[in-house]
Image 1 (tube, rainbow, N blue to C red):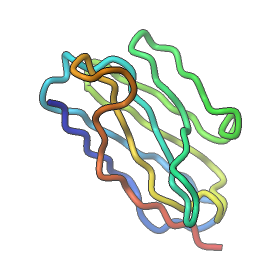
Image 2: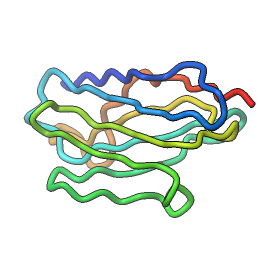
Image 3: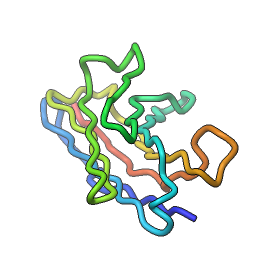
Length: 119
């Protein structure tokens, strides 16, 4: 099994910056793609970016140009960054992993880290 732990959330003023981390542990050899998701208040959880094991990153259309995601396979860690935070960036950010144990899709999830952007 794979365990995912996000960190870096908190209360941030509008215009500030965000840097989140997600560290994987356990059977990390089984991890294929990883991803960031965002759940804003009153909305469904939505994809921010998929970080492929091979190094490429695919952003959801609505997230392009807003966030920068990166992955460090040696550290079993993915990151999510954003400058110029806006109140609409408030929400819970989750990381997820697709593992070779699953049937496809993201089968391991972190608990999420909450980000609140104050205006």
